[in-house]
Structure formats: C-alpha cells, structure tokens
Image (cartoon, rainbow, N blue to C red; front, side, top):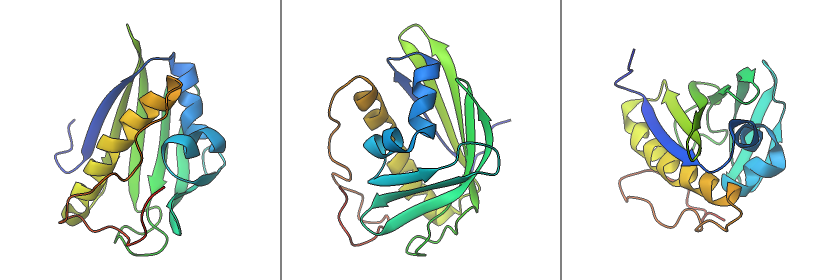
Length: 158
C-alpha cells in the first residue's frame, strides 16, 4: 500500500545489492555519502547515528537488517533544529537487482507535512551522491543549495 504522506525516492547504483548494502551499515562508507562521521550498530535494536553537517546529528535505531536486501531504521534530529525527534520517523531501504546494478528504493515514513520538503530534498540529493561514491567518483558538495522555505540549521554542510 502506498503511503501518501511518505517521502519515496529511487536510485540505480552501479554495484550489486550486497555492495550497496555495505554503504548503509558501515560507518566509514555511510559518512562518505551522507555526512561527516557515523556510529552504527547494524543489527535490530542497534544504534543508527551520524553527523550530517557540523554539529547536527541524526539518530535512531535499526529495526531490520537483511544483508544485501533491506535496511530499516528510525530517524530523527538530536538538536531539535528540525522538529523530528530522534527515532520518530522510519526509513525503509530495499535493494533490488537491476540490469545496471541495484535499484535502491527508499521510503521515509511518519514525517509531519512541514518537514517532508526538507527530507524529500535531502534524499533527492543524497541518493545520487551514494551512486557517485559507489562508482568511485567524488560527489558534488552537499548541501549545494536548499529551497529557502525549507528549514535547515544555519551551519553550512561539508
């Protein structure tokens, strides 16, 4: 069933699902496409925490970890600068074989309407960054720019 309030994005990544999976559960790899540093415990109940821009942390817990196929974790912002408390929303990532590598299907649920644009914009930028780093290329800096109507911490990104 489709959730009309969810943010959904897809991205083809030129690597097999098992390789793409590693980029969601290895802290050094995750930090290369979505942030500065990460502390991850990729097992059900384990912590999911990373610094997305200087001083701004996202955190939650892994709910489901199926190597090479699926990762589900809760999500929120530690500082309160963005009104999504840690663990209050859920990100589901499904990895499907694709002729060009892996189709990454990401659905971010349980977001209030006022913060959906920020997260839609973020995933629209970060998933292509994932594809770039997996392919061995340097991605464009993030955030390059954000819509003015989207709330964002005043600290510039990496």
